[in-house]
Image (spheres, rainbow, N blue to C red):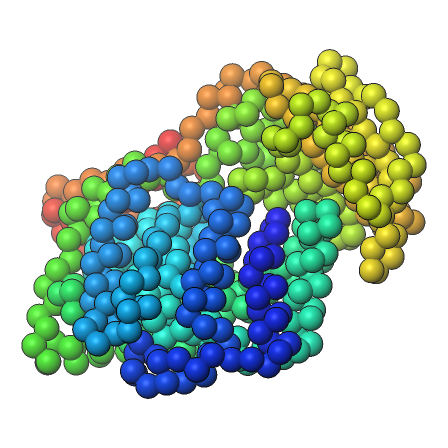
Length: 496
């Protein structure tokens, strides 16, 4: 992930290395306690990382969905400790940012200082406003409790040094080599997203509280955690990312209704679900991976939106991200990265801009062509890395008014053997002309109401798109295959 958390790591490194801390009042308890960074620093960290995160992962492009999520989230925020009478002005005056990421992964998370994210994948798996209210309340709770700053106090000198090295290693090339990519992802979770189970339980409690105070049926939140548990059991893998350090979903299924009832006993009726409006918001939402943004078919990576294609080397893994395409070899020690270079006017300028940086020992460079028709330029170089010397091929090609730049690298000892593989990809970059692929459309959710009491299994179409199966749809709708769905109930069916 390019430069992700790069600016914030400098703040974090300074704070931890200096063993400094901020003594400030907690928005939750009103009592003073030690934090790794001041509230002002938390806001700055969130602002810096938000820019990187949006650039890297992209936002879901639907103003109506944005507005819907924002309005509900703002309502929950107003019920939180951040806006209550008696809260310090630095909390009450902090502007929160709520974003919907264009990702099929089921996830929600918060950055320090009031930056809250949900994915379209998570929204698709909810059934009403009440469930979203609990999720957003949970994430606002992380910010209000300042869990990232609490977590920061627990980091060791060595851990920060390792994480800083991984991120600075990316800075040099701007590339996620397999090892660096993994370390960076772990660093992001470790620093901001991975809290203790006690912290997660506190955010669960706050999420229910904020939803209940807003009159949402907060017990509905339990159904979402049931879905997460079913997703985990179905995949046979570890629980989803947003639950990696969280209490067991079964525990949360039991605790959330219990906490909701406690608020009901205090006089908060919690009657709002708003299923109809929520389902209307979901109708037409992209579901799963969006093929318009690139996908692999028959050994070729194709990008319908940008109308180009190139081969995937046999056995190599492709990682498709909004800002780049990454290929990783089976051994994990060779990487190919393709990005659009918006700063350069020609392929030569693009290549030379990179290899002119300190540390590059240029071995050769010259004109080239992709698919015998697209102007290109390339250079081979060696770069000294803290773990050894890297062999690097930089290749830029001009196509359809854009400069596409490859940066391909491996260890110096393997570079000669892998150079033909690099060339087989860069040299085959070409225009996409297949009309079927150019016109492919994403799967979208189609929301409808059941006309009569019917088993869920009988409501499914005979064919489902993109390898989606019936069990996945049951989880998506928070039902079982044999459940009788009552007339008037809304269901979500992916169509293409």
